[in-house]
Image (cartoon, rainbow, N blue to C red; front, top):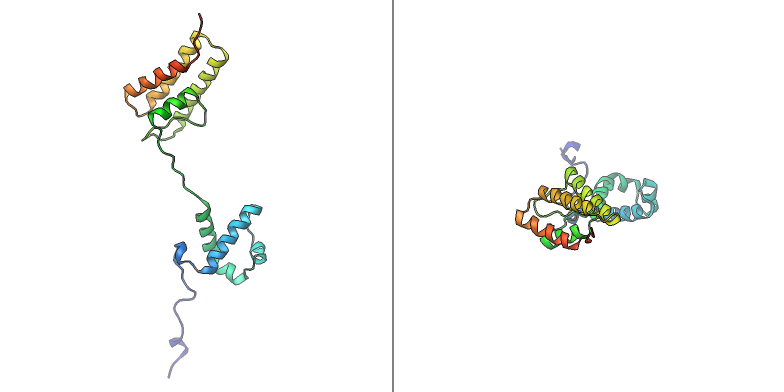
Length: 172
């Protein structure tokens, strides 16, 4: 004679892999709905998902997985290429505080950003007050920033010469 224990499953609910390609179709639909709702209203509530045609059971079953899928589909990792010599020269000629030159193997640290900010400030001061002292200070601050970068001394000199030629000439 068979008992009820013989018919019971040890698995209480289906387990879906984390990979989006193997996710349940309804889970993928919920993830897409979450992305749309978030882009329109800035948040996703259960009430919004009910309005989008999902049941409470589907929300309970797929809610967390759909949220992960929606987040994964919405976040994009962007890795900028390292700056080449021409990029470093261009950024030093027209400095912007939020665009420091970062060659390969350079991490954007707070100290590096502060040093670049000093150069941007010195360059702005040179534009406002084009005196010989300001020009020398600007080049000294640029050299201090370039000394922090993992580039060869010859490359540093190339950048310094290119920037010196681009700076306004000072009449004494």
